Image (cartoon, rainbow, N blue to C red; front, side):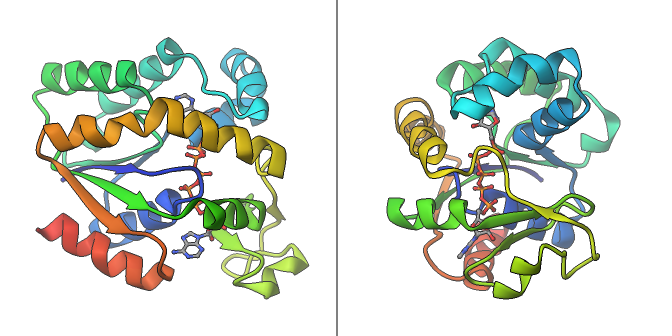
Length: 214
Ligand code: AP5
């Protein structure tokens, strides 16, 4: 099963990706996670990507296309994958189509997680992520995480540098300008399924799972 999650920043792509991975055992390909690791490791890629990410801008297409191309050619993706945060532009979507054709793969489902814009800002500014296990929490819905300790593994929780109100606002503008057109792009290919992401995580997951099975 080759799945893509589409949606605005904070729509819950990472949260639902974790559920797909748990249920179906697919590898998670998150360009945001790959870039954040490069930043933390202070690699050349990380140094280049950081200034775009901190400003809420997109990292240049050729950089992320190269990363995803390399990742999709690894053997653990043979049985399927979950793409999260890629593609984000029509150029990236066209390149993904070419890569999948070269690898004789195709997308099984593109799931658009749709959430109202005020909820996106509230969710992002309240997000906390575990440095150790990568679990995602929300300090308003889960006040216990205000302690800074991951309830799953005991690791340290942190707030992403790009989750400030100012950067979030720019990320949402960038999404509308560059990524939202991909909804029509994939609808035209007949693989798009919409899920109402305004509900709680468990209800959204029921719809995502149904969309994967449908
Ligand atoms: P990336 O890491 O991909 O961030 P994003 O797309 O902005 O998405 P987020 O991770 O912020 O949100 P999400 O939808 O995964 O939501 P989550 O599940 O965490 O990209 C970061 C940056 O990297 C970009 O700005 C860009 O610079 C660069 N980049 C990455 N990919 C790129 C690409 N392809 N091209 C160019 N540049 C790229 O949930 C958010 C919060 O909401 C959490 O607190 C969670 O607990 C909560 N929540 C989730 N679901 C629910 C629910 N149903 N109800 C209530 N709360 C919920």
